[in-house]
Amino acid sequence: MRHTKHRSDESVEDYLEVILSLQQQIGNVRSIDIAHEMNFSKPSVSVAMKNLREKGYVAVDESGYIVLTDVGKKRAEDVLDRHTILTECLVHIGVSRETAMKDACMIEHDLSEETFLAIKDYFQKMTKKNN
Image (cartoon, rainbow, N blue to C red; front, side):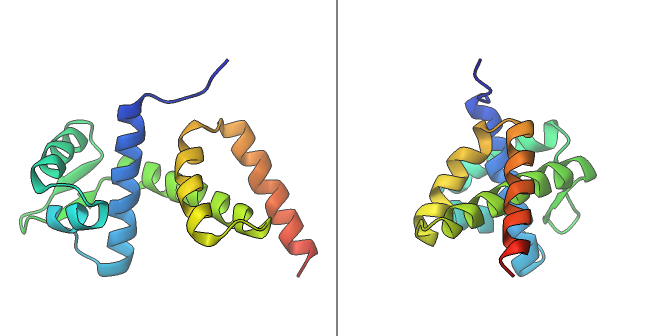
């Protein structure tokens, strides 16, 4: 049985992760910031933002800044946590950081919650033991 998500779910997660990351880096986020970060066209990002608004993940404030809703922020934090933990696990076993980041991005979407939590728990125990 595969746990793969639909490609549109992966896209939603990628956008939410980028929005959260940009908010942490620069504060207020506009569509152009997302377009630059993801290397996508502004029209593509506009379509995606409309989709995210309709799903209740983002809102646009009166100044035109994109803001994660509570639901969007939670999902973005979950994806970012997966990405961070998986990247660090891969680096820990000898994968270059650049490759680890790319691979973690692919893995984070297809891994079941059960498997991710087991990896996270194991990695945290291993890193505590080694410190």
